[in-house]
Image (cartoon, rainbow, N blue to C red; front, top):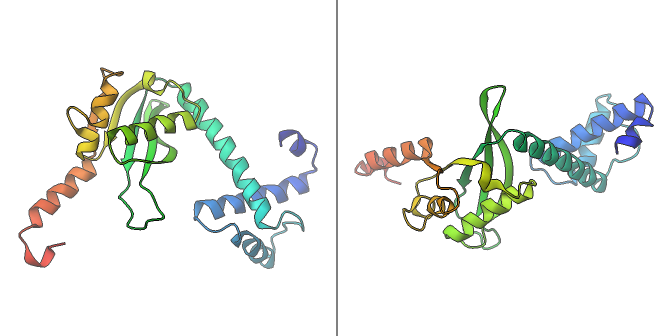
Length: 209
């Protein structure tokens, strides 16, 4: 892709840049790839020159895949160059739909210019909603961005206060400490606040959930 771009004239490069930006918007807004041609037509109606090629859903998919590859490589280089790092794992709620599974969203917290920053790493399916299943999804998340020795640089993990995460003997944090004895477990502050509010209003009839 890099060689192709270098051999292109500036006008074609400019059009491709706009198409890549449009494809990124489709992905960012969770829109169907089929919306890409219509989005391009709308922009062209407003006077934007996008050319006459690549204006279909298949090219949109290819653009997004290329963006994903570059983003993952950048994230891997950023994290591996800044050891140690901490992982902030947030568990989504179980869906009532039989077609959807529970997922684990993994963020990485690293230092950037002396400041702590959070980097979205990956989202992983959780095949089984127990500690082993969640732990496997976190490890797979590390490997998904090219970090095969994620436990070596891990210093802390934040999560909700569910027993599957914070259980003293068999929780995810306890299992990680078998390999990372120095690991710091952090109960999400927002989740603590949620639990406190729910506990405070449980006897208020008009606020019962």
